[in-house]
Length: 398
Image 1 (cartoon, rainbow, N blue to C red):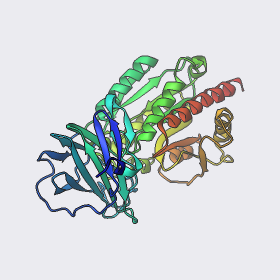
Image 2: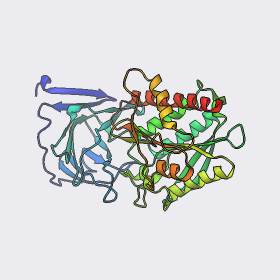
Image 3: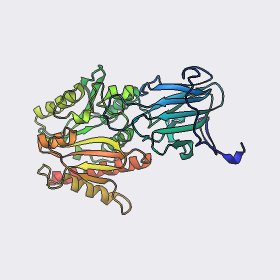
Image 4: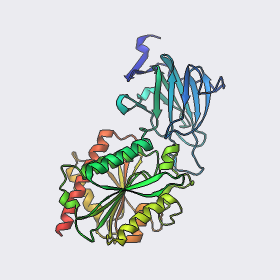
């Protein structure tokens, strides 16, 4: 193979080498040996990694069967694995989807915990989307590949602790998951009694990492040094960033370990995770804080805000229209920062709809695109946070 037939991507001593024929059909699995042994091996033994069936197709070729934790699930086919090599090695990994289609472009972990998308020509996807093949050359040691950035439960707990320390918020355990993992809330006390309650949620769906990144950037901007905190002081804040720790730990596509999408359990509250969140909200209400706003952070295929219709009889009235106008006024260019999906399906057990139905207050689902550039996610979040501060300042004046 000549140098002109290669495309090289180098980071942290990892070189991805794509031959001109990288799109050729890989070898069929032959079960030469288990994936976990040999000079080049594949493992899934870390937090957030699902335990998919793996077959070896050659000395450095593997096939993973990507299947959901439960049937009849939203198609969010997460994957995460480590490739280990004793020497520089050309490796190939086939992601096989028996019932779903490939969705997430693979990412690689770089030095310092940073992540980057693999080059487009490092992966070939079949026409029907049921098979994706990664071709790469890995350096000695371990190389982590995943559908999105891997953010473990330990890392999430460290972030909550750091954020709480930086902002002076109180951290409380509000409940436990089905498997006994703690669910924490951060609370910021209002400077006045009976202040309206603003709730911020995240982490309901494990693969939606852009939502995690967006939530963090939003909170950092909202409670950062450039914010007039006197505006925020007139509101009570309840923040629950990581509502589905079991799903994150096990690398689930969507559900908790009770086999349920938590964002379809607001109202029924059949799961301990949503019950914990509901109890935390009700505890704030019992202290005299009337629900004012709920923001729930997620990720999907585009940047979009799912909002109530502007004509909905909610208080504050037309919040979404006014907030989005402030966002777009500060966003560079002529295009809106987020797309918008105004709707209200009465009785739908999502956090957004339940909140509006129960408290006659607006709930908004904040969604970032799967492949949205991470700098854009940060910019969107900062703009949205600063727009919210401006909105709240005007609301106080009224």
